[in-house]
Image (tube, rainbow, N blue to C red; front, side):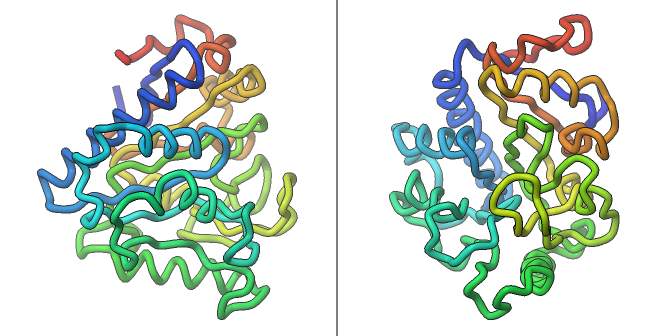
Length: 262
């Protein structure tokens, strides 16, 4: 099994999936902190990303994490004013971040449209790329810190982060962060990590739940290529996990991917 070969974990329903993913992430953070003193996680927005954060907030095991030694990044962000409730970071704070003792200097939100770059989304993307590069170590790839876990929601069209099928951002091979204009779902302007940046993570976890994701999951796992199905180009250096509920997994040919243990 190569690092690009996904492992599937299928749960009975989306609630169990969120709880199990939360337990898995807490364990992974604690293990990383025990091994290296700190941990680094890239968060995702959307219903499954937010459900995961809410499940961590509700878990007694959350106290096992040393929240002051955790770096948090985002895979993408809606390029809106900083306080806009549609922003992934605002939603993450509401679900979990405001309830745990994080070090504010280690919470790396993507720039907002009312920030120093104004409406220049490309400048905002470059600013976030610089922040990533400052946090990267000498052995880290592409000027990106070695994320322990990078979370991604999978859209019904197979998009991950704000990388949409056939869109310019999914074709990027050199930049680590891009400004996205004309996204096919609102808001049209966004900031996103690129696939090369995503693939620097030790582990990439893709989250999908619900019947509306079943087609996207089956397509991405059939290997069509990342231009047609960006989720198929998202994988980790050591592990790639697809965390699914039964509804999202129902169209996957069973012979293609044996499930991993839950």
